[in-house]
Image 1 (tube, rainbow, N blue to C red):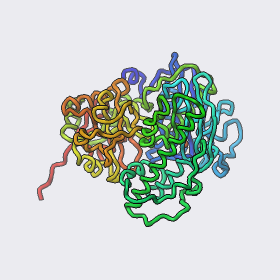
Image 2 (cartoon, helix red, strand yellow):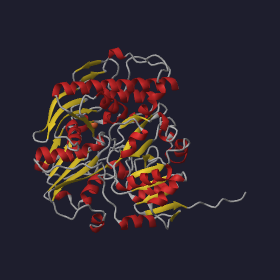
Image 3 (cartoon, rainbow, N blue to C red):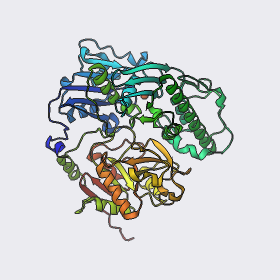
Image 4 (tube, rainbow, N blue to C red):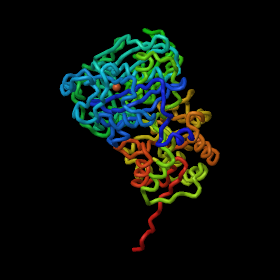
Amino acid sequence: MAIFDACGKGQLYEKGWEMLILGVHREPWHDTGAAVLVERGGKVELVSVTQERLDRVKDSRAFPSDAIEYCLDAVGAKQQDVDLFVSDYVEVPVWNKDRLIKGDYHPLLHNVTDPRVGTLDAPVEKVAMINHHQAHAASAFYASPFDEAAILVVDGRGSDKETQSLYVASRKDGIRLLEKSDRLGLGLLYATITVKIGFGILNEGKTMGLAPYGYQLSADIIDWSKRRFEGIHTDYSRLCGGRYELHDPLPPMTEQTKARLAYEVQEEIERGMLHLARHARQVTGAKHLCIAGGVGLNSVANYRLLREGLFEDVFIQPACSDTGLPLGCALHGYYQIMKGNIRWKFSGPYLGRQYSKSEIEDAINSFSGYEVSPDPSFNKTMSLLVENKVVGWFQGRSEIGPRSLGCRSILMSPCVAENKDLLNARVKHREAFRPFAPAVLEERAQEFFNLNRPSPYMLLIADVKKEKQSLVPAVTHVDGTARVQTVNRDANQPFYRLIELFGEQTGVPVLLNTSFNVAGEPIVESPQDAIRCFLSTGIDALLLEDVLLIKRMEPKTRG
Ligand SMILES: [Fe+2]
């Protein structure tokens, strides 16, 4: 920690570097953001943030000016210090028509909707535009532990309207595209059913949560015989159109119909991903597989794929949605364009900037309605959890990607069945059917879950062991599964220690871990965001780095 504080204003490094690359994912896509890669002193380091965390608009499509400034500021750099700008491109004419700016600067890095705002003045010779799927592929492979791998990218659509791509990669030769599909694929199928159920776009996670409720409810609603699997293609064009419509009429949309649709599409995603994985293995002969693109967030499909044992190991980029694209752009720029040769050691998705002690103090002094606990220890925090309090947890650098993994989290005891409803009523306000996830000490995960490998990014679903379900009812889904995060001591020491203490006290080394936000809002980023969320919800206490805030109880008036 001292290294961060010593640099002031949350900067990660003293000024000075051998190379600085800025990766940008910009509008009109959703989840815009930025990443800065620095090579310095024989090491590669990254900072990355999604624009939504800063402008506080969920899935923000804004030009990522705030994210760019945040990342450059974290390393003490300015735009003119950047050696290479890398962004993914969009080949849709209607989106490009406003980009008529000419001159010495690259037009594609200007704001589409308003060129006067958020312009990135990048000299043409320092700009590289890369394919959206290529950026996804780089984000997964260069973060993976593999020297060689096949890479599957599966999302809605990429730069050239492709839906699924297969790459082969090696540290020596880089990443090479083998095949791609432009047919209506798994991502758009899942999005279409999600819209039909009524959850709206970008809410596929809700469909996954609803799916177990549709098991054996009735016969198939969708005629799945109409799909075609062929090589890299999983073609659903005889079932769906491109604008979230289904060709065949649906029965009346009752709760049962919704659950059945969710169940069917979930099963289909699993079949489709298995087909693609088998195809990737057959074509590349690779022992390892990397997965990126939004469909990689489907933790149920991921674990089914792993259990098939098609590959010796599989790495799923924790920011496999478009939130990981800035990272992929920066990594592609470093390894494939600048031919950087220092290996980036990916030790977790904690890529936000550090907040200094004075920034934390300023935030605490800007609000009221709480007391600073004289005992800010982890022991005290643990005892609040044992007393069944709701605890906000803000530690270190924020996580990139859609999941909170122990740096911006809301925590509760998993041992009380009612905690799910209690948390929903007091803080999260989510649909009642959606499960909450457990974070468990890595070494003790197998005592509670049928999981034969670490799951550090909450991207795998596993069965909760029958005899343990009554011990962790708040994180056991209706079908007896859980979306598990295994916590490694070295990857996140404070979080590990807290769970360890809770385990020593209760015998259950597990905590309910959900993202630090309320429904419809982005995860908190700054200390101010965290305090605001703490004060506006039913969170009882907030550990903000090493300061424990306890909400002040208003005296009840007699009446
Ligand atoms: Fe994507």
